[in-house]
Amino acid sequence: MPNTPQQIAVIGDIHGCIHTLEKVYSRISSEKYIYSVGDLVDRGAYSKEVITFIIENGIRTVKGNHEDMMLKAIDASDKLLGFVNREVEHYYQNGGQETQYSYISSRSNRDVKKFGRKMKSLGHYEFAQSMPLKFEFKKAVITHAGIVNDGNDMTLLWNRREPAFIGKLQIHGHTPLQDFSYRPNHYINIDTGCVYNNKLTAAVIDTVEGKVIEVIQENCDPRDLS
Image (tube, rainbow, N blue to C red; front, side):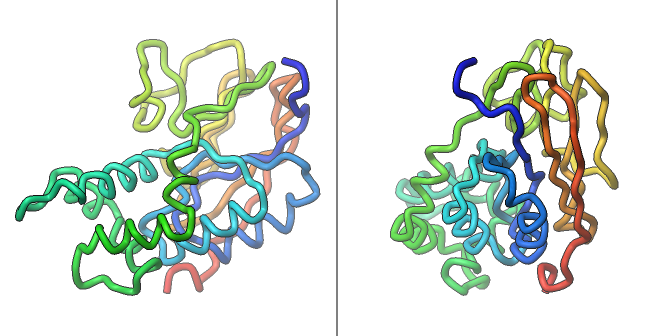
């Protein structure tokens, strides 16, 4: 693939942990091309700040299942007719309340309409909409949850199985682990559950060779759990 970077850094699931993200970024910011496996939002306290940071620093990110749930909830809020829409309920059951609070400082009500308007006013809704499902390179591919042989677009967001052998190194997150899991020439899972008081992980990848060059980790900053 012409004009694609040979060396990139990829950050695992962030989930609103802005202070830990800043620490990891300071250690990889010399990399010209920085990516994320998605799930920037929900569960943690600083989703708005994370999206702002990602945009301002030109970090490229694939869509995670939490961005997908968020967008669907906001879109569905315009169709509510006096009852709780399934998409809205699903989103708030999966950490959406913390994201709402980071935008409109309200946890008491599921005010997805106001939350959505605030996201749109900042350009964050459009940014989330624009996230692709994958970034592909000569010998590497980034998705949120990993590619499986019988998969589709939804499995790229929700898969919990071991990724398939596809002739490229798969870089993904979604399933939180105590530590990263790396199988050479196959995959690396870099979701290390930062929002669960564990670690945020980033991997430096040679996209031509399909190899992990370095793994960078930071323990969750206590401020992200307040």
